[in-house]
Image (cartoon, rainbow, N blue to C red):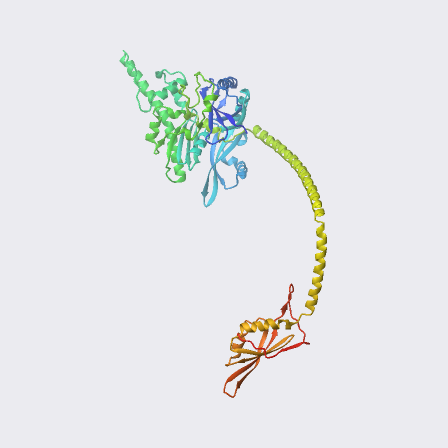
Length: 584
């Protein structure tokens, strides 16, 4: 992608040129100048005398030491048609298809010979459904081809096209947060743009510029002005809107009165011609307010060379319902100090002027306020291109994609080969390292074999121990639990046990219910299936009463190390423990 482009707007009388950083917000401007368009070279946007115009342009580019070849043209012609349309809310890649399908509904003419571009304005909600608001711009193909031929003659390469209503608005949208009405007074057109929340919501391009007023000045012989350049300077220095003309004194009073009347009539005609721009702006704002059914609030900005005419700011300030504001150019464009270095010492040749910000005197017909559309065209162009350019771009992109795919495939192949080689080398190195380590640790095998033998012997002993396991091995732990868990007033007099059944004979000094007795054994975890089949009361000779209890239970199954719980039963063995007494 190119870094800098030459942005050109070819007018009937003035041609504006700027060298700008391409597609960059707050764009650096390296050069900006204007020169007189050769006589009869441009008519309604079309370049009629391509040879003389191309020679003049090449000379000016050489004079300003501009060597870049890529160019963006800004078109101003009554043949360019714009429309605002609403389409369903879809993804960006679906918009072009919808436009192409409904093209004939949007424009009254045969669009087969037009190139239609678009820009997104806003997203609106209509009847509860989101819709995209688009600005469509239809440009005749023969107008685009006209400039392509001219660019070839001038030794330039067309990058893209823009139209007069786009560039200024794009710069303003990037720079202003508040709502604004931008009135753009150009040579061949008046553009009214309404911005809300940094978005273009409405635009009208009227093919009526200040050129009509310049022609009117020449048509009135009383002023003695014979070309448009003098007429432009006249409007800069004479306030025809609010002042009255004064003719020089003459000896013939009748002739003097006649000249005064003619001068008054001329001023009235010129004032009416300039006021027409005001009517265009008022009509556009009223139309927009009727559309949205609310009053617009915001600031008014006057731009374009026509905004510099004497009395124009006062006219719009008094007649428009919006406060008029001056533009802070530093917030819109970056006037690079590099421009002074890059610009060769430029002469005050007829119709040229130095880059904005330099101190040399400039012709009155060229000022920064008139360059916003030219600069903006290099930042956010509408990107209108003739069919041949679009097809060439598609082929170029297709070829580029093929090269990219081929290069990517080759790169992937190389990476795979390198990756496989690296992995192989790493694997071989790791294998050798492991082999060496195995040799170093070979003594471990003997230790391992001995350990395995010992473990096998231990396993044999464990199997023998498991085979001889019986529940009576829990007797001693059971006695310990009884000593810890039973109350002090209960005495175990005897324990009779075999490999499955445990019988406890107990004595208490006072009566204990069966339920209470069972609760006393709640924490004795080595017994289960508790039952008290017998409870006896005994009175001795002295009169003391004792209570005797018999409790039947079974052992809780033994858990062997590493195995699940298993019950060991052997009815062949019986152990009697007599007179075992516990006290807690």
